[in-house]
Image 1 (cartoon, one colour):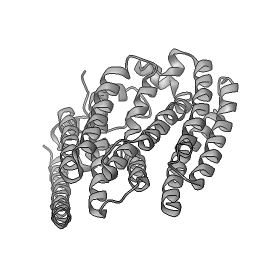
Image 2 (spheres, one colour):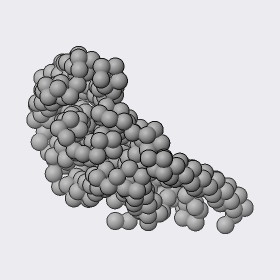
Image 3 (cartoon, chains in turn blue, purple):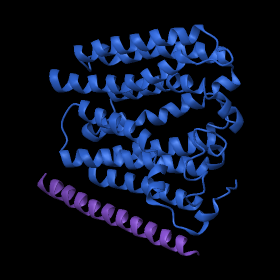
Image 4 (cartoon, chains in turn cyan, green):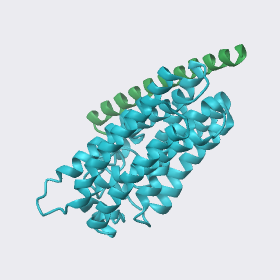
Length: 303
Length: 41
């Protein structure tokens, strides 16, 4: 894999903002939010300083994994409009610098988590970084159209880690929070992939709409939305939450399902504006924020 | 290196040094706070 660096960058040190961009700050904000939600929704309490340290470790780990992901995918990123302006494809940062930065953040996050919180949380954090950077990015993303389903597992770790940081054990509730994000990811991302599929095809990534076709992807979006409705209600069924969460889950998952129906039933035409797909994608981001906010509110107000 | 590149080089290095200094001090403060909490337990 080679990279053509911009001439001026070849002998200039990278700007700190480029290192910051390697951590995918927008993804990190979602990771911090779901990790914090897991931490706040867990039974028991944690000292605020230790809670802050745990969330910082989750954020650092996510940033490190993101940097390793971009280090590995620099030449794929260069081929796609959405990612071509990232620091590595632009040659604004050295490839080994990006790798070392990713390793440093990953190692530091796991070490601090182990020393400051406890080692179960650190082991799960290390597992999540390995899962995203190696199992997903290096191994399965370029090989299978189920890449997004598998990648969803990586994004599902933060609430699990946040929860473990407080309780020190893995129980059914944090596993259900994991399952919610795991099931949420495919319809969230495929809604996006339906309208940027040309990019993925050009980069040779076997994204579901490219490999299985649009029709199959649309059907699967609907299937996952149905599964999401069931999984999102499960925390209430096992007695882990109260009525605030139940009401939010019914409403949000109901709207999610309702928005996925038109996506599943239609076929795109040339010059299609892809409005239903864009609407589902936008709502899916709101969905996750709202559902986890409801989870925390439920715990704070009803516990 | 042209004079413009030299100026840019120094600017970037200075900015990076500031960010590293900030991160180091932040971690020192964090570890201090964590230690106090752990000792108090």
